[in-house]
Amino acid sequence: MTIEISDQGDGIPKERQDDIFTPFVITKKEGTGLGLPIVKKVIEAHAGSIKVSENSAKGVTFRITIPLTPHKRG
Image (cartoon, rainbow, N blue to C red; front, side, top):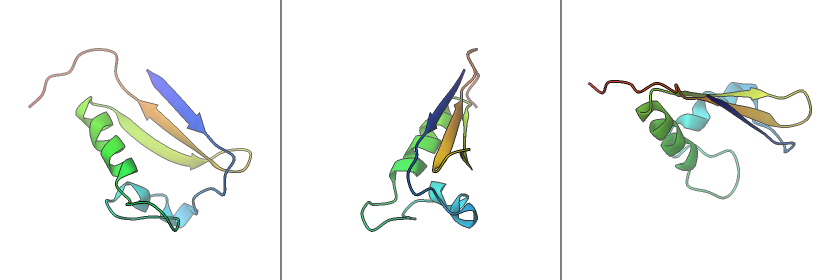
Protein backbone atom coordinates (compact mmCIF):
# COMPACT_ATOMS: atom_id res chain seq x y z
CA MET A 1 0.00 0.00 0.00
CA THR A 2 1.31 3.46 -0.84
CA ILE A 3 0.07 6.73 0.64
CA GLU A 4 1.20 10.11 -0.65
CA ILE A 5 0.78 13.32 1.33
CA SER A 6 1.58 16.61 -0.42
CA ASP A 7 1.47 20.22 0.61
CA GLN A 8 2.07 23.58 -1.01
CA GLY A 9 4.05 25.10 1.85
CA ASP A 10 7.56 26.49 1.93
CA GLY A 11 9.07 23.06 1.30
CA ILE A 12 12.17 21.52 2.84
CA PRO A 13 15.55 22.40 1.35
CA LYS A 14 16.97 19.40 -0.51
CA GLU A 15 20.11 19.41 1.65
CA ARG A 16 17.92 19.08 4.80
CA GLN A 17 15.58 16.35 3.55
CA ASP A 18 17.73 13.51 4.94
CA ASP A 19 17.95 15.25 8.33
CA ILE A 20 14.22 15.64 9.01
CA PHE A 21 13.92 12.04 10.23
CA THR A 22 16.65 12.61 12.86
CA PRO A 23 15.29 13.32 16.37
CA PHE A 24 15.36 16.95 17.51
CA VAL A 25 16.10 18.36 14.04
CA ILE A 26 13.65 21.16 13.25
CA THR A 27 13.17 23.23 10.11
CA LYS A 28 11.01 25.96 11.64
CA LYS A 29 10.83 28.05 14.81
CA GLU A 30 8.36 25.81 16.65
CA GLY A 31 8.27 22.10 17.36
CA THR A 32 10.33 19.47 19.10
CA GLY A 33 11.72 17.66 16.08
CA LEU A 34 10.20 14.37 17.21
CA GLY A 35 7.14 13.98 14.96
CA LEU A 36 8.72 12.69 11.75
CA PRO A 37 11.28 10.46 13.52
CA ILE A 38 8.41 8.79 15.43
CA VAL A 39 6.38 8.42 12.23
CA LYS A 40 9.38 6.79 10.53
CA LYS A 41 9.90 4.33 13.42
CA VAL A 42 6.23 3.27 13.36
CA ILE A 43 6.28 2.79 9.59
CA GLU A 44 9.54 0.80 9.75
CA ALA A 45 8.06 -1.37 12.54
CA HIS A 46 5.51 -2.44 9.92
CA ALA A 47 8.26 -3.19 7.35
CA GLY A 48 7.49 0.02 5.48
CA SER A 49 9.34 3.10 4.36
CA ILE A 50 8.83 6.85 4.12
CA LYS A 51 10.46 9.14 1.57
CA VAL A 52 10.29 12.89 1.04
CA SER A 53 10.67 14.75 -2.24
CA GLU A 54 9.87 18.12 -3.73
CA ASN A 55 6.53 18.07 -5.51
CA SER A 56 5.77 19.59 -8.91
CA ALA A 57 4.08 22.58 -7.30
CA LYS A 58 5.45 24.34 -4.25
CA GLY A 59 6.07 22.19 -1.19
CA VAL A 60 6.92 18.55 -0.59
CA THR A 61 5.43 15.10 -0.96
CA PHE A 62 5.83 12.32 1.59
CA ARG A 63 5.44 8.80 0.21
CA ILE A 64 4.66 6.07 2.73
CA THR A 65 4.86 2.45 1.58
CA ILE A 66 3.71 -0.43 3.79
CA PRO A 67 3.46 -4.05 2.60
CA LEU A 68 0.01 -5.58 2.77
CA THR A 69 1.33 -9.02 3.67
CA PRO A 70 2.29 -9.83 7.26
CA HIS A 71 5.99 -9.83 8.04
CA LYS A 72 8.05 -11.76 10.54
CA ARG A 73 9.60 -9.82 13.38
CA GLY A 74 13.06 -10.76 14.32
